[in-house]
Image (cartoon, rainbow, N blue to C red; front, side, top):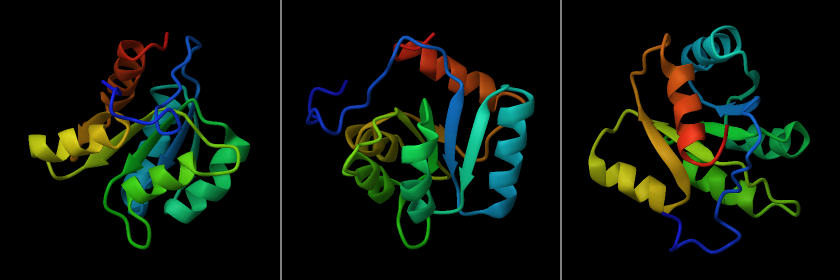
Length: 143
């Protein structure tokens, strides 16, 4: 799946369990809902960021196992944020799941080509999103 990516852009999927999720979302209501369901239902440790710049600052210290990120954000888009995370002096190589309200298959393919392991459509079901994320993790080499 990542045969077109340079080694610097390819995500690092480890065989360890999924615990730490960096969530990047500019909409406060969506950010809060996801933070709550990922913590309460998924039992994940979550670091929430309101934009790409916050994510670039938080990710190196937080060391996420996975990144869940909105595509369209003001200032720095999700794809731009992903490129920035991979370009840090100590690159953050956690796998990325993009979330988008645009549900065209071409959009999903483009995001995967940029390095996303998967794409989740908005609106999402708060009761099942943690399970979807765990399933994606399992499909891409995690436990």
